[in-house]
Image 1: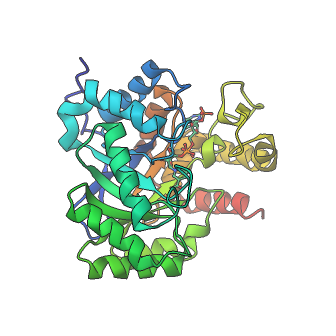
Image 2: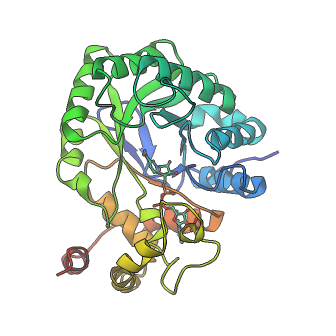
Image 3: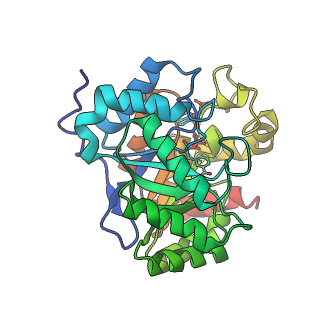
Length: 329
Ligand SMILES: NC(=O)c1ccc[n+]([C@@H]2O[C@H](COP(=O)([O-])OP(=O)(O)OC[C@H]3O[C@@H](n4cnc5c(N)ncnc54)[C@H](OP(=O)(O)O)[C@@H]3O)[C@@H](O)[C@H]2O)c1
C-alpha cells in the first residue's frame, strides 16, 4: 500500500487561485499524455506518487485524455482507488468536456446535454463522487454562453463539481463567461490556457484580465511539450513525444525552435538551472499566474521540475538576454 511522505508539504509553494479560497501548488501535473492504454501502469503510479510526495496536490484530466479517449481517467481512477483514496481531501482533481467524445450531435462542444452527460461519465471512469474543478474545455461560438455556463453552475449545485473553470476561451468570451458565472453564484475559479516561453499570447490580455477579475490562471504546456527542456538538444530521442506518430509535436517543431532552445539552455546553465527549470520559473514571474501545468513521462522529470522553485529570481541581465532570444533580436 502506498504511503505518502510526511514531509510532502515542506518544499512546494502554494498560491491563491484568483479571489477564491483555494491555493494551488505552483506546479500541477496533467495527464494528457503518458496515462493512456499504451502506458505502463507501474510508471503512471510512480509519477503520481512522486508528484504527491513533492506536494503536487493538483492533477488535471479531461474526458478525452488517453489514448483512447477516456483511458487516462480510467488509469487515474484505478490508481486513485488503490493508492490515493485516503488522501482524497488533500487533492484537487479536475476534468473537462469540450472536445469530441462520442458520435452524433451531443458528443462535443458546449451544450448542457453534452457537458452534464460527460461529467457523469468522467466521474464513473475515475470512480469519484465529485471532481474539484469542472471545465468547459473550449469556447463554443454556436452555443449560447448562458447555456454552457449554466451547465457548469448546475454541476456545482449538484455537488458533482466543487468549482467551475474555463479553458481556451478568447478574451471577450472569457470576460462574459466570468460575469455569467458570477450571476449564477458560481464564481469562475480559473482559466486554463496555453502559455510558455514559445507561446505567449496569454500575455496580451488574458493574464492581466484574469487577475483583475479575481480568476486564477493555470498555464498548460509550459515546457512547449518538451521543447523547453534538454530533451531535443541533440536530436529526437526514440522515447520522446516528438518521436511519436502524433500531430502535436514533430520534427518540424523541433527544427524551428532548436537554435533558440540551445541559447536558452546556455542562459539556464549560467543560472545553475536546467532549461526546464528556467522555463517554468520564468512563467511564474507573472503575478496573475497561479500554477504551471506540467506533463511528464517519468518521475525524474517531476523531481527536476519541482526543483525549479529553488531559484525563482532573475537578474535584469538574464531577463534581457531571454527576451532577446524569444523575440529573435
Ligand atoms: N486545456 C487544454 O486544452 C490543454 C491542452 C494541452 C494540455 N493541457 C494540460 O496541460 C498538461 C501538460 O501538457 P504537456 O504535457 O504538453 O506539458 P509540458 O510540460 O509542456 O510537456 C511535458 C513533456 O515535456 C517533457 N518533459 C517534462 N519535464 C521534462 C524534463 N525535466 N526533462 C526533459 N523532458 C521533460 C516530457 O516529454 P517526453 O514525453 O518526451 O519525455 C513531457 O511529457 C496536460 O497533461 C493537460 O493536463 C491542457
